[in-house]
Length: 138
Ligand code: 5GP
Ligand code: ZN
Image (spheres, rainbow, N blue to C red):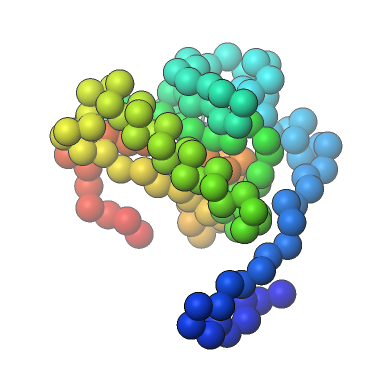
């Protein structure tokens, strides 16, 4: 169902969390990192999220922050789950400080779907920095 036209101040409702199939989760690289089945350099974790270094870094600092729960992409995020994104951004900001790039600057990016450049179908936030990044966004 598409987004209804909104009146000013109107709150638009959304469906509850999407459920993923068992196979989708078993096949997911990032779920396997969460389960410790694929080794990675884990830099932070709590009940909701985990952060690790990207295996193929695009810059001196390239970290990935993901929810532990399998959510395929931003397009599958329910309205009730949106606070999770704020939590992920907060963790990314803390990690940027720890990496020493808070002052020099960095980029947070979330790719969504095929045309958005998403290769791993588990919601994730890229934290990239440590050099002057290109301005290309699309
Ligand atoms: P996407 O293109 O889906 O936004 O980005 C996926 C990212 O995950 C890529 O930057 C890729 O290098 C990273 N990645 C893919 N597989 C693994 C893995 O097994 N371990 C780690 N640490 N990163 C991975
Ligand atoms: Zn997953």
